[in-house]
Picture 1 (spheres, rainbow, N blue to C red):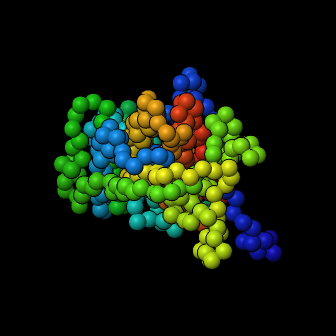
Picture 2 (cartoon, rainbow, N blue to C red):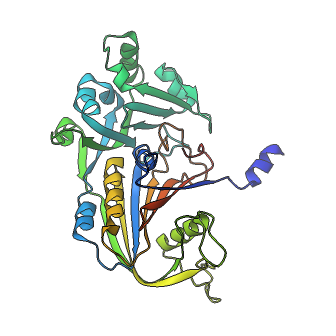
Length: 359
């Protein structure tokens, strides 16, 4: 009966909202962007805009490549050469793809040099390595610090991990890879992994103009909103999701698909520009885009605010930092900035049932 009751319960979701100003010393915006590692979609919405500025358009079109490589042996990610070439000389991210976090073995390499493995019970035992139980499933989580490991490649710990990945339980995965070098060196990803099936990809960019868009009225000073004067952060978050889904916002009686309507008070803008970038997008690129959106208001604009929304991979073993992430029914983990013309901002962070509270 207890199991039946749990199945009938609606999964819990969390939305954390906070407000600050980009000029404040204690603003967390940069840290939150940098520690949300595996991002597959970035969208921004600019009211009262029909055409992107040259700076924004150039930035969007130059987000940078990412790579896919098939059947890459896991031991390639712990070699001395790999760590010295990529991990120590920039921000390197890797994530298994075509895998389901709740069904398959998955691996992620974080920009801080942590290698995270989420393994089923049998595979975990075959590796002979030490890990911890998953908080959300019967799986096991192994965390390997490559920076620490590289300090002594003759250590017993390194030899054991290398033996496990090379001989005891050789594991191969299809990976997405991305690298942001800290120096002036050009990426050598294609040549480094040339003996494997590696391909370079450019993120997909979709640009569109939404006409006659009904937008909620907001006040940057109040997340809770004010009756008949301004909408709340929660109402705005729901509205933004409806806009991204191209849902009708007028609640017409003949519409059997959507009964949603724009929260009140609202105002109709003649046009709004919507840009969506899809790929394997590094946090460094997102931070530059956020800074450029802040500079959008350097000159007077009709728009009172702009938004930047970032969605993470549903099947990543982590969400923020090294916090475990599970799929359950949706696997969502995302955040949204509402950037106001006075440099105030709202930060909205949402996760699903199998996640800790956002940081």
